[in-house]
Image (cartoon, rainbow, N blue to C red; front, side, top):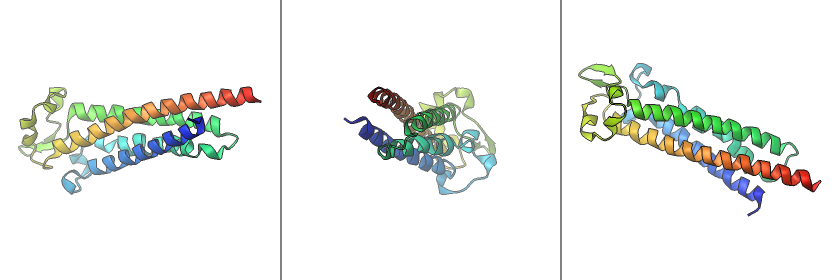
Length: 180
């Protein structure tokens, strides 16, 4: 496959994944389909890993790679830096989402808002019966687990694709350098 076509495919995949991350982060802000105050949402949700890291920061290399066929003279250098920027964003998304999974959601149990699963160090993920202890927002544990898991998977794929794109830009750079 032509390296430029490969970049185009990687770019479209990165754009799609970044939109998935933005959507997942938007849904994390409205557990149970309702808006809650910032004091009732976990810090990991408020840090917006899917919107900032896995979303906007990955859109940059996605768009650059998708437009690789335009072949602007500075494309290779720009694309390389964009891939690094995208990898950093995806790593941010992965880190914050992983912590969000480990700590668990902030919810109300017996009228007290707190991170009630924090001390379990992620063991709550296997204890489905404990998920019902959260009174508000309803079903917040399954909501957060599903969406943070989606962000973890999407950000891992973004890291992989940004890395592949970075290697591809180096290959194109050296091929173009030795062609001259």
